[in-house]
Image (cartoon, rainbow, N blue to C red; front, top):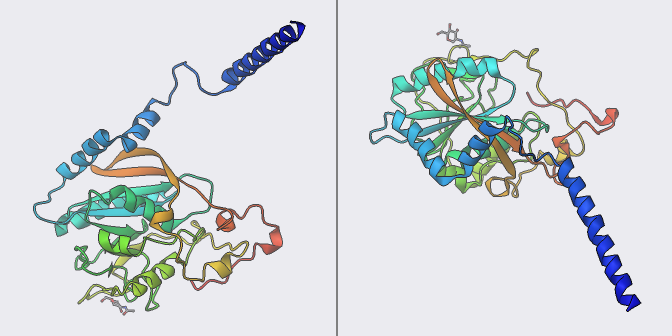
Length: 319
Ligand SMILES: *[C@@H]1O[C@H](CO)[C@@H](O)[C@H](O)[C@H]1NC(C)=O
């Protein structure tokens, strides 16, 4: 009997302790029933994952385009901290493509995590976001504006490199495919998108070049262009103001020179925290706030801040 009573007492005191702990946790948690300023966040967050909302969202874009029987182009812009360039980019591209009669929409894929910039991963995110609603993508630098009207952003039966080595203001090596590259959805999927191992600036496009080659895809470039590297594009790049993140830490230098057969579309880990619509001089632009995840076992160089100073060697990269 006394055994039973002491057990009951134990049970009771455990219950009391647990409820005290729970009360404490609940009071500490940021969940509250007070009104908060997070409504627009929740709304846009839900709308990304809610099929009905999503359909409405895409319909509103598609309906605003003049499509006819044409293919739809999604301009996918990997982005961080380039607001002034975006303000120029959106109206320019809209005018340029509207004159060509290319139905298009601009998607700004804005990296908001605290890792180093990952251009390729952002392009993958953009592709996954648009692929069911658009026919082809242009992976597009925000600082490179085409000014020769003969550069046709047409549906690419084979990967179409607009910023060709003879035309790009800065990069002229034959296997260069950066800047502006158009792919139809099938081809981007065929090569599993881009490698996500490239944190910091450079080389991700060179790895992508090998992916296309290995898949037997021929890269085509604009034909009969009368302009050259000085007057085909406006390059809004201020080298001193926009310092490139050419840091190399851990074994980055070695690892990023290898062909990557592992990462790509099917290994993407990220979260779209918000989707916002901007109006820039009457041009509607979609901004995706994206938090990339980094597997620090695979790519510790997504964050170089913990490295001792002496190993933060500045690379003498090719550019
Ligand atoms: C590029 O084209 C412009 C205009 O036709 C010409 O003046 C210039 O010399 C050319 N530059 C090069 C490097 O060919």
